[in-house]
Length: 480
Ligand code: ZN
Image (cartoon, rainbow, N blue to C red; front, side, top):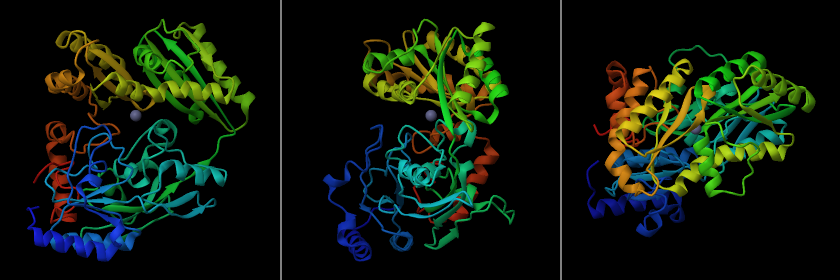
């Protein structure tokens, strides 16, 4: 989009204020700094203004106004994305469109097992609305107190329950979307089955706001488990963790709802920065696994099933040590260790983050081989490896050597480090972005690693649905 003349800019802001009310259009630069900075503090944008529509009709009107004035639109929910997808550029020409006022739960049907909620609903509130009816909304991630439904769908977020319930895409039955023409697609289906042509829903999920604005969604609900049990096991290497995963899957089936891998170093980092968090095992082994079992019978049954699986693994020598939480508080303490890893990393300083997926069968070879390559190229660099082993998805992060300048390390070695990790991922048939998306951070990686035929189809879809290039300019596919 070209730079606007002052008079045209003022005309646009005035029209926006007439549409939404003066208090819901912000254009003082001081008030725009925070919403125009991404969660990790890597990008600082400078939008033309921030608009906060109250409902879908207003979103459609804002889109029409932007189309007339040729103003790019950057949709934003809770602003917790990790790739800068919801951060405008610094040109002062893009409108930041916050969906945060759109927080209504429109309906909840236990018979259909469906909740229909607006894009600005905070994930935790959707979970609570389901729980109030005795149902489970399973999408769960560290930022669920701020992340919004529209944001997790637009990034196809994963989290810690994907193993059993799938990611945001798998949970979504229908969408309401404002298109680039300013029309509303009323696609809030409650159906499990609907084979009536192209699946438009799946185009908008994971599109990071580049094809349209998601304004509401119908999402699947599940029965609440009668009991949950959590355990921590320590292991000698990643292949032992993969073996334990197979054993647990075979014995527990769909009752296995969490299987998170953490390097001992990740947990030590948490212990260093959050010493109040209890740790029930000594960390002599280099890896640990957090298992969660959800049971439809009850506490005693759940405890027995988990102890059986882990007892057999201990006996056969695949596991060094095991602690099963015997209360909800202990289970929460174990999950706390896992959830504090990103926080401990942030305290430790900037690091080079990778969000990768590889086939589980190749995970052990990937982790060992890549550690050797990094040790050779970046002596002293510390690996902070953790994530959703049950989904074949790891957060493979590289922290500066002890005492080194973290920002300098990132600037000097970020590119070389990405090449080592992402080339290794590609060689395994994996993905360089498993659950965080592309945003602006990984545009170059997409152009480098994505199949050329796939890229061509993605560009064709973008051109067909958003011919003016209104929606989230520069994100995902980069500048046109
Ligand atoms: Zn994750």
